Length: 283
Ligand SMILES: NC(=O)c1ccc[n+]([C@@H]2O[C@H](COP(=O)([O-])OP(=O)(O)OC[C@H]3O[C@@H](n4cnc5c(N)ncnc54)[C@H](O)[C@@H]3O)[C@@H](O)[C@H]2O)c1
Image (cartoon, rainbow, N blue to C red; front, side):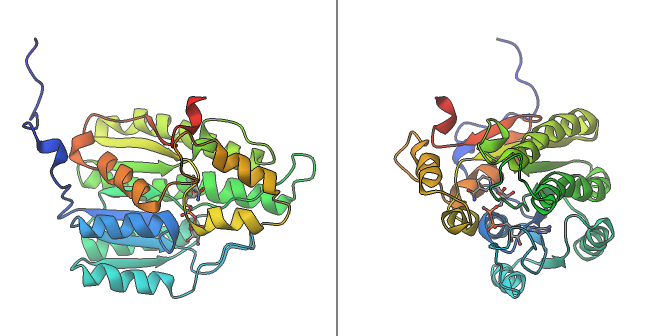
């Protein structure tokens, strides 16, 4: 057997609690759902948090409704855990607004170590009747948004001597979806960004991965049930695709995967796609 490389963890270390003390995690779409849970879980593990969200319900799809005080109440929970929180009310499509949040985070918390590109929107639309609003919002928020945020955050990761970027794609970033071509394109696009950034940023000790959850128990998933034009059959098919007997996974499951990927236990993992699909993609 060849010599082990680097500072190999001792036996049992894989099950030890993850520790992000001294780290700063920057999370987009932090006011609800997966972003909120990931922010809290990083704080529980010792990290300070930059929580960015649009601060008002996006114009598309109209059904997404995040309370205006959601970021403030998240900050209270983070501070109750003994961690610092920087709140950023910004639209991921707005380069100047995002830059203000990044500059404030660096000035207040001293830097950024982890980026979770998570903000996103979802709606159904047929290819031949898709509105400009649906097309533009989906591509601009889900695909261009992570590009704008990452462009602004990478200098801080380089200054920190390394870091981790985790892109929240979807199972829809690894398969097709009827009446979801705009969403699917945005989520496959994140795979291309993940691989390209992994190549470009490896020399700076910055790892980049994407995660691919099946339906997650959030308002986005709930809203599909009531979204205009969403059929009962579509909803049933989505849940039935999971091999394990669950209709969806929980935000805690997403947070567990994100924290592990962000941790030093995943120190040689970059460029890859990590499914949390209850087996859906196995068939
Ligand atoms: N819920 C699911 O079933 C599921 C499955 C796989 C992947 N995803 C992806 O997970 C991510 C998080 O979704 P969620 O399930 O937590 O839904 P969610 O609707 O609870 O959270 C999305 C958050 O993004 C924010 N947001 C939307 N547009 C924004 C913008 N322009 N700028 C800044 N913030 C904006 C919203 O305000 C909201 O807080 C999304 O990218 C989604 O596509 C969701």
